[in-house]
Length: 315
Image (cartoon, rainbow, N blue to C red; front, side, top):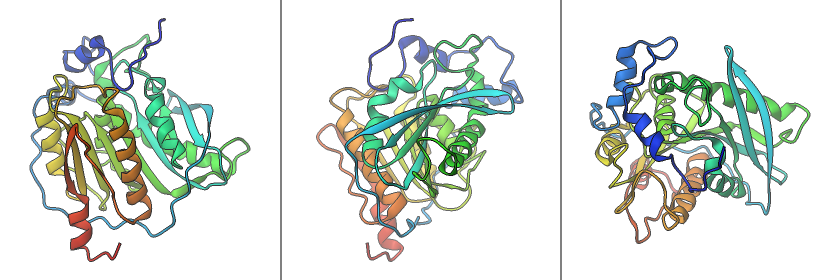
């Protein structure tokens, strides 16, 4: 199979898959009504705006960036679901915070390697599972299986964190008290699910790239910080749907909107996504100043700083 070389995103076939009516009867353990909700939300979200309860980052000193990144592969499983996971980790003393990244429909972790390595270089362990029924090359493709992926991602976090005390390259490198999730497209929907229908209370931060809501379920749980990144000309997951979900976050939040951006991140947009994501994670996991910047290609709605000020933080 020929490898794809685009920076961030899915092929044209994958974009169609996200909005089509899948031929399968529905995801395991979920009804077709739930599946239809997942597909419908890519155009319009029904979530309602909410006021912000400020998120206060945990105190700490962020680890320094590194000059090189290692890679390790793990054959994780959840309830019989195969979740082979590629981990990019900083080559340094650690410990480092842990982020789980969810790929888009008919995509795979390596399609996002440039972004994930750039975050690992700043001092973050990044774990990216290959989902069994939505990844490129799967023999049993089912768009509705996104409904099962938030629990998959949480299981991967648990199993990667356990490597901190096991023999291997991640031993002593993971700070399990600082966790985040991120994802693109269907992976963005998966990430939202981890803060709503399947809230993982370990998560302190989330990054949603070209995503929307998860089964129209409101955000819940303890305050966290959320960053949304979306192209205004995205014709796969509409910007308006993504913005509606952004406004429905009841905690500290920010949104980068690329004026001419589509569903994938372009070469020109990549530095803003990379630097913005890294700065957001650094603030959300250690405090200080968010230091987000839109650059010349995007606009920024920064409600992280406003929330921080209203919370009375001196940072």
